[in-house]
Amino acid sequence: MLGIIGGTGLTKLANLEITRRQVARTPYGEPSGALTFGMLCGVEIVFLARHGYGHTIPPHEVNYRANLWALKEHGVDRLVSVATVGGIHPEIRAGGLVVPDQLIDYTWGRAHTYSVSGEKPVTHLDFTEPYCSEMRHDILRAAIKKNIHIRDGGVYAVAQGPRLETAAEINRMERDGADMVGMTGMPEAYLARELELCYAAIGVIVNDAAGRGASKNGIREEDIQRVLSDLMSRVRVLLEELVVMDSPDSCQN
Ligand code: HPA
Image (cartoon, rainbow, N blue to C red; front, top):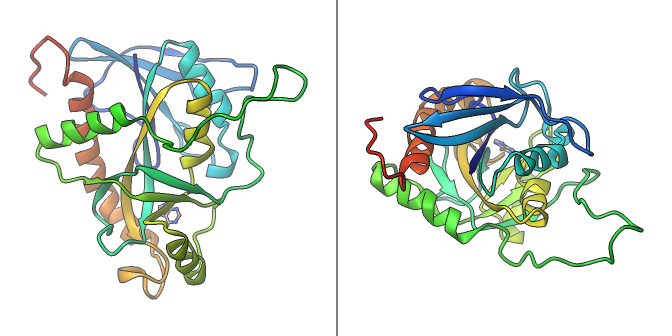
């Protein structure tokens, strides 16, 4: 089953016929909220709001381990994550969408693995390609079908947050090879790998990164909100296509 983790600005899917909500418990504690199961054109999916349904959980306090564990336990094998980002690369600008193909992890202090000492022999999982290529291609294919422009590829720098970056930090990230910056890409992507989920992300570019483009003199919340609602309506169309794309039933969404 396909799972969707919604980030800032995406706490529900309009056309989803909700069938049940399930409060899940895991060995790692509680997920950000109840899992929402529903049908889109005859296809069952499950949705989870990463920051809680009232958007109250900051990026560094999200229980990523519980979120992914609960989704897996309830039948998810393919997972798409929606995450807002700031654009660093000159072609990754506010108002656009991107499917990252790489990441750099700058986070610290987050529970970032299911592996604990004394249980199983230590293994070092391959993470050369942090995203599942099939899921990335499916997202890109859904975008083409719906005529939605989305950039294929880019390096996602995962910052600790919750504060935004300084201009010098963005310059350093760019020198490191980053194209966009967000706060939730890790440990989510790696935990998905540990659980053998096919995982990819949709980067929703809500601002130019600190010191860049329209954010030369700072990042204003009003500007983020302005682009967010338009972007999220495109993301909803994209997600709905992604869900129904390969379903045998025709669907008029
Ligand atoms: N920095 C970090 N995370 C973000 C940004 C940003 O500029 N925009 C949206 N999420």
